[in-house]
Length: 81
Image (cartoon, rainbow, N blue to C red; front, side, top):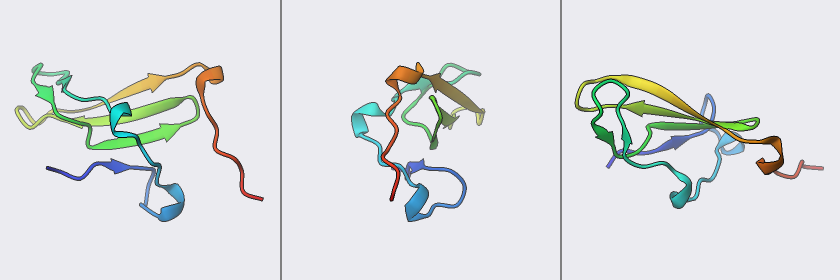
């Protein structure tokens, strides 16, 4: 099983986001050939959105899917003092 990477840029303790296993999309169909992909290779949270990088092992196609949320649904972590 491959390692799932979550974060932005260099993986440091400060920019890694914890993901609940139930929140990660599974078996997304490849945008090129339709083969189900077990899980995304990369997850990048942003302001009001989450980007998922998918890589199809059947045809080699790579693509990004973006989930966009209403501002009211986005939970912002508390700022450090």
